[in-house]
Image (cartoon, rainbow, N blue to C red; front, side, top):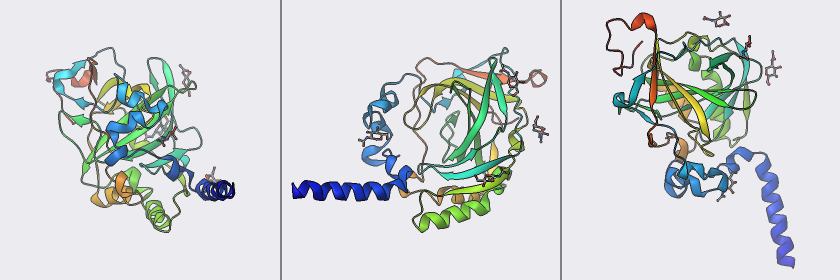
Length: 281
Ligand SMILES: *[C@@H]1O[C@H](CO)[C@@H](O)[C@H](O)[C@H]1NC(C)=O
Ligand SMILES: *[C@@H]1O[C@H](CO)[C@@H](O)[C@H](O)[C@H]1NC(C)=O
Ligand SMILES: *[C@@H]1O[C@H](CO)[C@@H](O)[C@H](O)[C@H]1NC(C)=O
Ligand SMILES: *[C@@H]1O[C@H](CO)[C@@H](O)[C@H](O)[C@H]1NC(C)=O
């Protein structure tokens, strides 16, 4: 009896400690080891689709699986400068928006940008090539249908979006080293106008979230333009993450008969090998 009380005091104390860093303790999946990607489906009944789903992400954008779809519309994005918060999601670094940033329209549905986050290396592969990082812009409808716009990066010139948050990433690194895993850092106004521009080319397929619960029915649009970020920026995005999350790309998933559709701006179609996979605009 005394022992039981002793344990309940301990668990209460642990619980009280954990509430200040809830994210950290509620993440029980990893990218390697016993809770690695091949085990995600068994960590929770709500993660089952991670193992038994048939339409999972990421996938390899192989040119032999890509079909041009002339019905696809230009992926117009209109994002306004908006107040945002830097968040250490433990398994990646993200930016959450408070107000209305902007919408994309897919098949007549409005999806609003809610948050963005980075993975490295890239999760989607371009014709078998892994790139250095991948940005996910997560959009939701009012019914919580999900559409993610993905941007692949290689190392090179600094990325203007990450440049806006570099100081705060340094601050986040310091806080993390001091053990404050739960800290949110106000960013002030963030302008994602760089990704405002419409794309000449994007790849569309229906897949899933790339982290548990791996929910399916996610509409993916992977932009055809390969962007760059600097080595320092990539280091800043990794620095606050634990060793098991510094490499946070889920392995490729089977297409299982899914087609990857390509949008290609009509003005760029003439005389080009339109169905060929290229990472340029
Ligand atoms: C892993 O986390 C999920 C979500 O918080 C939870 O439902 C599940 O019970 C956890 N699994 C284990 C084995 O701790
Ligand atoms: C981004 O879109 C918004 C809304 O349409 C517009 O006001 C703004 O000027 C655009 N920015 C750029 C750089 O195109
Ligand atoms: C999408 O949102 C815009 C403005 O945010 C609105 O003008 C438009 O009617 C909406 N479209 C749909 C299909 O809800
Ligand atoms: C921006 O967000 C921060 C943190 O949530 C808040 O303190 C601040 O008042 C917000 N600023 C505006 C202009 O909404």
